[in-house]
Image (cartoon, rainbow, N blue to C red; front, side, top):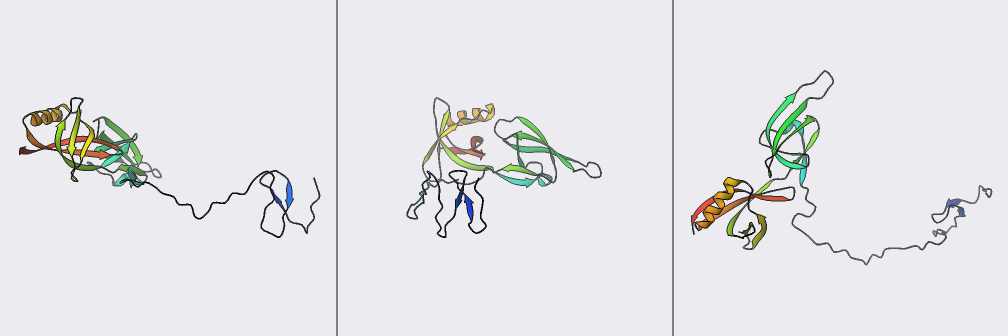
Length: 197
C-alpha cells in the first residue's frame, strides 16, 4: 500500500477499493463508471384516483375505543361489541380486552391491547344506491348519485337480507340498498323500501 502524504488529500473511489488523489476540480475519478445526471426537463405524470394515498385505517389509542366503535383485529375491520379494561399491578399497563364482530362475515374476534397503545381503526363508509337489476350470477346493478351504474357488487350472504331484496325486486318495488365499505371491501348491509315504481 502506498504511503500517504499529509499534503495530498485522498478519497475512496466508488468503482474500486483503492485510494485516488482528489484534484482541485469537483470531478471524481472512477474506474468503469459513467456519471449519469437526471435532466430537469423530465416531467412525471401520475394518474389520479379518488382514494389515491388515502389510508384504509387510522391510529387511535386503545383506551378511547368504546362499544359500537370500530377496530382492526387480525387485519379485518370489526365492530366492537364489548370492551373491558383490566388494571394491572403497580408498574404494569392497564389492558383493554376487545370482543368484536367482523363487519363483512360476522365472525367473532378478540384482542387484548395495552390501553396506552395505538390500535388501527378502519375508515367505514356507508353509501346508498338505488337497485336497478339483479343478474342471474348474483351480481347487482346499482345506480349512483352521478347517474352511472355500479355493477361490481354481489348479493349479500345474509339470508334474511337476501330474501328481502329478491322479494322486493320481484314485486317491482323501488329499492334503495346501503353499501358499507371498509379496507377495500364493499358489501350490501341494509335495504330501504321506497315504495312501488
